[in-house]
Length: 151
Image (cartoon, rainbow, N blue to C red):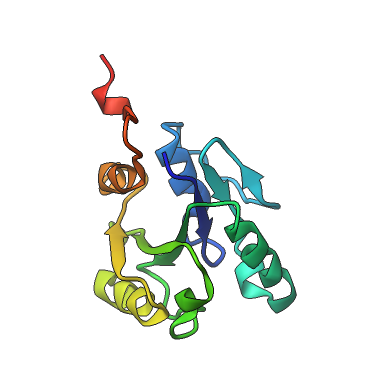
């Protein structure tokens, strides 16, 4: 699988998505530092929210094949500046999270991600698994066997 770094504001769902992609039980926990897993880099939201810490995201993005920008469909704002993806020489995808929540506005979140420069956007619900298989299919490398393909 391609290695992905997940970036987004606090409570965007990065750690929950990490757990879903790894097939783990969903347990709510606060990410305090950058966590490296096999093919996933999970980052704290504060790194996006604080300019000084944001530099770390730029550096860690070079360890991944794909940058995943998360936008919660229940947030009333976006922290991503217009066309920010042009600063990264990696594939950058948008991931809209919390699509099942009351008041969710998938299209508003997707428009923020498109404005940031994301051309490919996934809609996921990490708790039910909706959209997870499509995201994993995107990250698949030739020869990879995805969990649901195992006998």
